[in-house]
Amino acid sequence: MTKRRFKNAKPVGANSSLGNSLVKNIEEKRKTYVRSRKDSDGAQFQNLNEEKEEKNVDSKTHENSLDEFMASANLAGREFAADRSQVKILSLAETSVVVMNKRFTVTEAQRKELESNLPIPRRPYKVKWESKDELIKAENQAFLDWRRKLADIQENTTVMLTPFERNLELWRQLWRVVERSDVIVQIVDARNPLLFRSVDLEGYVKEVDPRKRNVLLINKADLLTREQILEWKNYFKSNNISAVFWSALSASKKNEKDINDLNVDELLAALPETDEESDGTLNDEEPTTSEQPEVTQPERDENVEEEEYGLLYMTDGNKLMDFLKGHINPDFGDHHATIGMVGYPNVGKSSTINSILGSKKVSVSATPGKTKHFQTFILDEKLTLCDCPGLTMPSYALNAAEMLINGILPANQMKDHFEAGALIAVRVPRRVFEVTYSIILPKPVDFESDIGYTNGMDLLTTVAFAKGYMSTSGVPDYSRAARLIVRNVVDGVIKWVKAPPGIEQKTFDEWTYKKTLMKKNKGNMFVLNQISKRNLLEGDKGKLNTLDSNFFNSEISTIHTKGKFMPKKGNDGKISLKKPKKIKLRNKFSHLDV
Image (cartoon, rainbow, N blue to C red; front, side, top):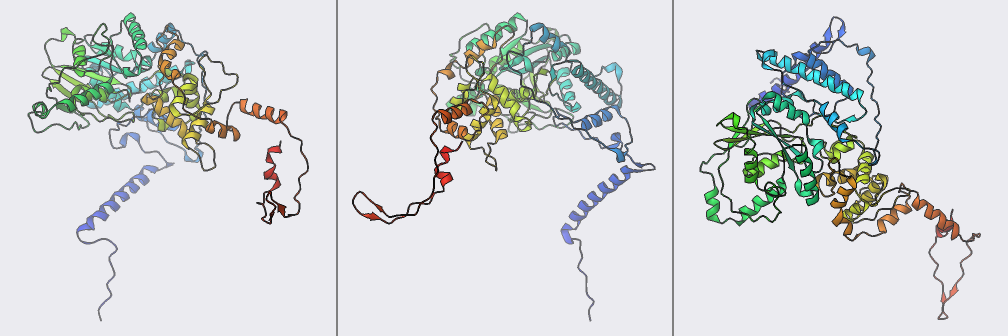
């Protein structure tokens, strides 16, 4: 009689090591977790400095109180014990305030004072460290002091401090770009350049080397009118700011059109001689270098009016590079120059570099913070481009909605959709939404405006109802409608351009919406009537009209009863025995209800 063989629970054969390795990894993590919690007193947090050093390059602009405390303790290199029997985490609710245009006025002197008090973290000087460990310790201490200084500024000022980058590794990328670049180009959004411009960064560039120069590259200039560009040019010229207007989107479209116009022989002549090409992948320590061959491009006929330098705004990468080359300081001598591209997330740094190179070398995404490490691209024997990851630098703004509609924060991180909707409704005229979404918005009561605006609640309700964004309970999905509107504002479908200091915002709005206000609205009254019947509008105008109509058009109410069915005689003399449809009295005479 043969013995019974028990089946092995573990896998055998070629895959025997796969399951064992996973189980072993999980068991090691469990034992490490248990050892870190046990000591003579009971419970203790694991030493933050004993964790594995892994470079985290993910952008971090928001932290709760616990995460902020843990990050500060990690930077300071402190060990602490926690009494787990008395743990209490407080979460304070934030109050959303939407500031109207007339109430928020900041003078030029106040704006310059606020900008001068907003620093960026500095890299410690060489005299303060000699080894790698000393450098890391000095950088952590400098970054901790910088965060404490910003906390003091937040407590002592009445203006709100915008979210800023809290990941030290991304600031290290900026330091490296500044140190190796001869010209630092700040790329800003043309719709609000002063919000994206960091004055302290320009000062830090001069601290590293006085020979380095700063240039302001104003991207997305195609969203501005001619009058608005000229007003901003006059402002930058009067303040001695070296600025150039640029449109990366128009440049990309031109490159695609030029490639489509080329014949086969010209395309073969434009191909690089080498067979291999760097893919732009980079590691944690060294940047990636990609060589770009010279591609002959046909001459273009520019139809834009000529200004002091070049065009009203540039759409040619070659002319842009000629402009930037002219800002290289001759004191550096004849050497291989480097131009660094820095700025906020989602302002078009990678798109600008791709337009200059003529091919897609840098990953582009609608999500802010796509670039993780700085990258270098060799244009020719004497010039290199350096792309820095997007950094959310500290600045002053009204609220978080200001960051959302300017594209600094993604729409998916929206916590208060009513705040963002109210801010957009205050700035953009009502007719713009009606033309864009083919709707008709109600006119709010007691809302002073020269152009005609609406309130945020009615805007979100109407857009959600028109798009079919409804929740399970039959209520309009306001959050989804707010995300749609915010994305349209960031993408330029709905325009709003900030006026430079000294110019009234009303004048700028007239230039922005001059063509839109003349368009005929194609929307109908169906959506508005449906919303009014459901009493979903915030204003009291619809309710007042309903009350007035019910009062003046009131009918005499009588008692209604159901009688016995009797055959009816028709006009042709025939008797009809067909019973009418049964309708409840409360439904048949519902229009008489108060």
